[in-house]
Length: 83
Image 1 (cartoon, rainbow, N blue to C red):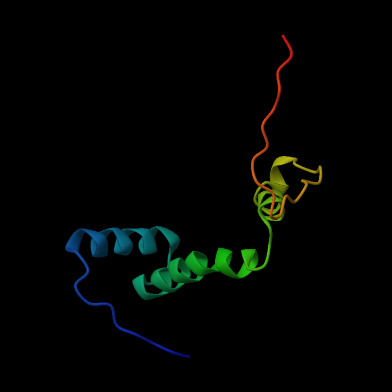
Image 2: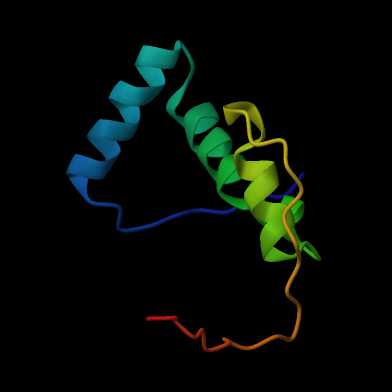
């Protein structure tokens, strides 16, 4: 496993990380690892997905079950309103 050092973190950021870690019952180091894991998780999931697929994935637990049309390479289209 790799490792790196983060320097010059503001005192208030460190204090908030420490409180957050304590509330989760883990070390500050474990908390930072979890934050970093979550920060890049969406990058892996959305790589190669179209916007519609990403929207469906994001709202899957909210009852969005209808397929969304992928509009790859299509620009905006004007509409006409009948009066």
